[in-house]
Length: 326
Image (tube, rainbow, N blue to C red; front, side, top):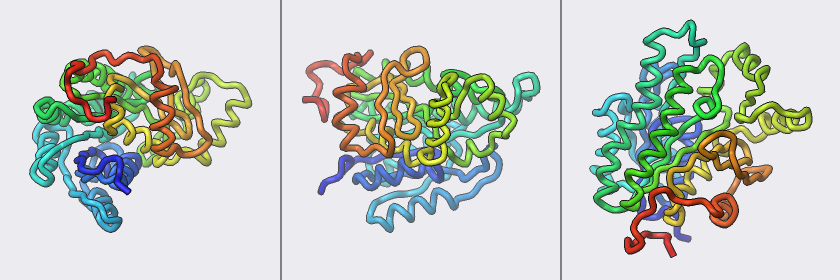
């Protein structure tokens, strides 16, 4: 059976571990050829290791897919451009870009150093621009493309001790909405995911910070204050449904041809919950399933329920041929 991404080429940053790895594996299973970027740094951005990206590539190849590794640093223009160049040189095209690369340097703002601020902004925000800029040139010329960025509840709602990370991720939200308007008329969509998952990065958050956030009504999934029943449900989900694989299906759904009219949106994805985030948090509409969503389920429910009545702020011209548009 043909995959939903047959013939497509997708580049992912930060794809050696966690959510990025799950997205790469799912996209490859649907027929996409994959560029796996990851310099293999520690959660704070230090160090380098080719292993994670190479291992994901090997895993994809063993499953019968096509993939190649890239180990560039997205915080530089040269690094971002090299990722797009790898896709073009290896596969001759680029259809999708998923920006997941991020680091953490958590500190209360009154203790944060300039270096801690600069390093996080450089990777987590500028690292989106360095890939979007060259990708947008290619996608604008070919009149098609899908870009999925990664924001965070820290940027949408705010998490204590994450002034640098929250600012970067709020910036990603703004960058997403602006790029959606810049590129929409060319048949290119730009959306963002604000994930809630247990990953290597979130594991570095100290217990004191978690307790402080909980005391202020900030849950791991990004919700506000909760009743006891809701808190119990959140605890259950944290134990059973917080794997990074839970975030991958909605990310890959946004790459499909049939998602052509979803543009400039931010989705909160945590466990079995997928929320459409309005200009202001929290989500204005939700889909919920106590389990991992399948792409077929999303293909049926996202257009008819989650996105019903929403407007693309920058739709392509009516006379442009758009794969997936009826």
